[in-house]
Image (tube, rainbow, N blue to C red; front, top):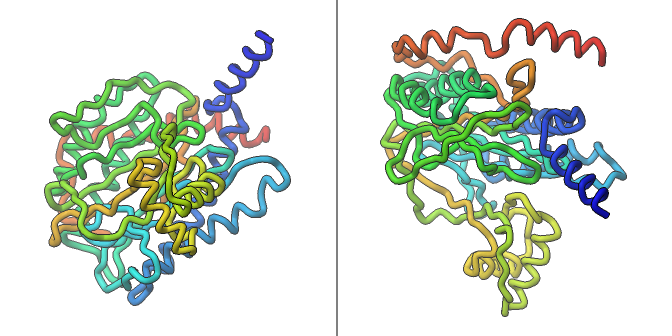
Length: 375
């Protein structure tokens, strides 16, 4: 029995780690699907397009792409974060139902955010696009470039042996160079199986009273790097927009009295036991009513829609990275288009030097090519 328990324990530890090729494959496959979905949603972001339809499009692409893989195997796969398209001063989680939707307008700054999981290995991705054609300048360009440059800084710092607390001051300097501020409370998380919020985090700015525990990066870890930047103070609040994204709160139990609430919880636990989901998935008004009751008893965690001040613009970039021996392996993330033109730039010497460094050491690249040949 001991042997079996030890074997099980070993296997469980293996599952979490990118030293196992199968785990890396699953992260990469989930990443491929996430990138394909977000690229298609981005391509549809044009004037007059309905936001609820865009969110539905992202989710349906993920489900279609996953339907054809790992068939017949008992492998959980699906949406790890429902598609959200948050505009202008909205900081995130805007995934409206049809009746609460809005249309895209010329000049809207749209943040697209979604996630995919294969066997519990999660690939999250977000990008920012400005609706319309022509060069993107002014505050929108500043916010996008601040997020992009901060992302470039983080990927160069994500190395085994480096500490999370060393990165935050660099990010603050980087974002401030573009006249922006990182949004309070947004952190990059370590990823583990079926978990998008692992214990190790990198905060984009130091907020008094919200100290982050110091941590050292280790080989074969996975991280979701999330950067949300505002042209304002970076302080977001809830307004009266309906929350549509929820997640089953782990370990929370309550004996629900309402039949609709019990039915809702049963359906959620069956369809989305561990990952966030959208109300879109449940057409039945009774289920939606039951969800309210589940939230009241803290069985579900809401992901509220948050806003900066009306006049501000908010940009987001999110990508996932595996800390491999050959250097950081990026499994999600889209490039920012060439037409984003900020008149601001990095002037800090330390940052300029860091940004000149290659993401991977040259030797690592060769090694990767050799590995690819072997495969």
